[in-house]
Image 1 (cartoon, helix red, strand yellow):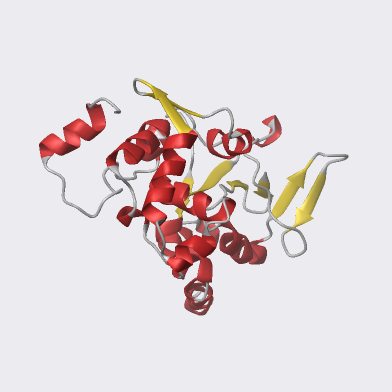
Image 2 (cartoon, rainbow, N blue to C red; image 1 turned 45 degrees about the vertical axis):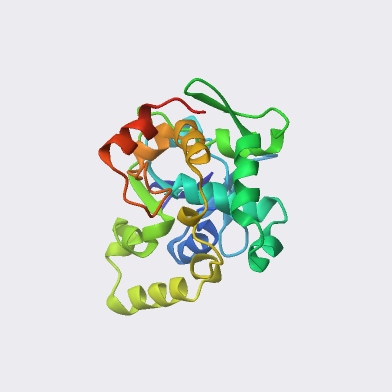
Length: 235
């Protein structure tokens, strides 16, 4: 878990959600990685990496919560590229769509609309299942990877900064290759079955963080196609 006692907030850093650049920005705002491994420690962001843990100790439950998030369709593709030595494949632009959809349909299985991670992908389960939210969980501020600058400005401790500081933050984001260097865009890659599997696996996440269930494609879907996608059988 990450925390700023000064600002009375905890930050839940979801992997593959622009958390490295967010951590770099938070270095200037007295953030720490909180650890209880051997003893209670507050590890300064200026010298230590941030935590990906989503566990908040009881004594911090009353603090405001910040969470980094990302469109689940984009997050699955980013995980595929990062974790399965697929970066070379995407650079060569060879069979990317086919391989990506094959991976999704091997990773996610379903019984009706209940979708779960295939047991053979145990390490992946730790990543994806950790962030399956329900609507009762409270989040005070969201940092969407797609809208990071605007969302950062909504944080009270950043909102109050002057124009020069904001400009520096904007320049830092603009120069970040992880945000701006893309060989493929996720909504060029999904077939309908893969998109349905991701949607039903992460359904609460879509609605909690206001992501469009139909953003897996650039096509404009008819009302009937939207209904079929949301409620039709997963083939």
